[in-house]
Image (cartoon, rainbow, N blue to C red; front, side, top):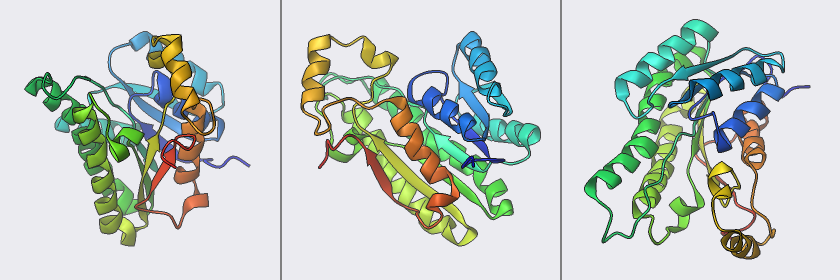
Length: 248
């Protein structure tokens, strides 16, 4: 049995890395997938084809989640095309790392806007239809950095920590309507972005993780499947760390 059969999921930032891993695993579990992408139309078309090969409906939308009006428009378009939005995964995010002394105001604002305000924008855009359905699961992507901080990432850590408080508040507000809201906090996940790091640095990081390896996008995707499915129907307002024991 497929855990997400007949559910529609909207996933932001899904053409690479963790987002792509989530979209693929969701399609395998029977979910129809609407996803957003920033610039690569080609990558979006390829992903559409890949997801459709699992016998589900899939469509990419070029949309900037950090823009309030664009997020409202996106939700309306997805509803028109798919009829329901059962699961929202706020995954889109950026980094602009620097020591606090060197972070520009623009680099701070941009990271907060893309990583945190986009979560507000899209959550606000889907709650009316979810309330009408009297069902929904919202999953926000935080980070191990949002839980413990990291030198050189004050802007990123602030954006990811903000997601934790936002998630808990949404869970309290919408629980009576059977809408659940949870956070996933990934640790060191090996994606295209980490492939550019020096091998020595990566080895050092792996050595410091109790499970002695970096995570994969599938590790995050599997946690998302659990929180999106009825298996977690009594779980809301929680943060699930998927980090190989980094924070233990």
